[in-house]
Image (cartoon, rainbow, N blue to C red; front, side):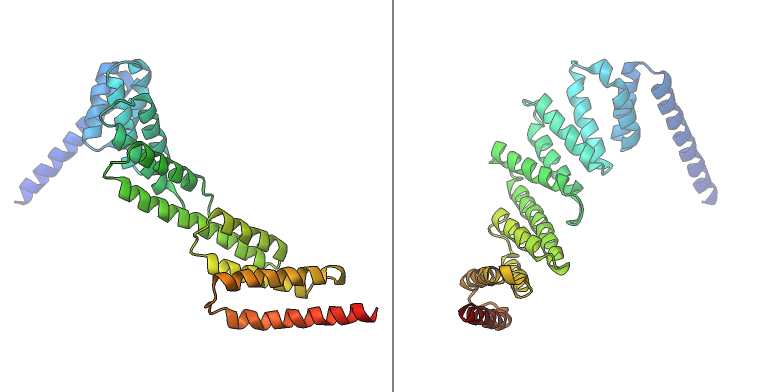
Length: 272
């Protein structure tokens, strides 16, 4: 039994060495046809990195030839299978544009969009791929409304949009925490106008009011009345939208303080 295991191991090693030798020979000295055949062999064997190397080498030779459609699709799929999602998205999109009548065009269009989705990073990082994914998924739905992938595409769009909302919300909150209240109010306004149905709406309006409150209560004399009145308006909008908010107990106490400040300003004006 032990001898059989050793024999099998040696055989596998030998086959691996032989395969590697064949691959190197094709890569370095093979004709375009030999490289093409080896690329397909590597692809079928799920050795995608080697397949990509060969496909990249033969692409100029097969440009405009019937095999090019298959080559481009396998290159796209190979990048996808090796989790190089940004590259996969690019190559699948290129495939769709190059072969709009291909039987694989719907699949390629979805995989291009889905690759951008997979490439989308956590919300705190640059969201270029997230935005590209949303655009691509929306384009896919428009072009293939009857596809069985549409529910998945809609689900992915919802998830990606939430990520953009969260990034926008966290940026606005950061302005608030660093006491840049004017920037915080602008950032919260941008969030609420860009994402009308955002799940962050209540908290965003609450923190926007607090930003307006601190901006008014700590303001210089010349701008204090104007800023306090603005804070009161911000609170009125918040209360209209969320009449049962758990934050109202806190914010109404702050409104009372702002009203007292306004009364004091009125008294001073009267005396002058």
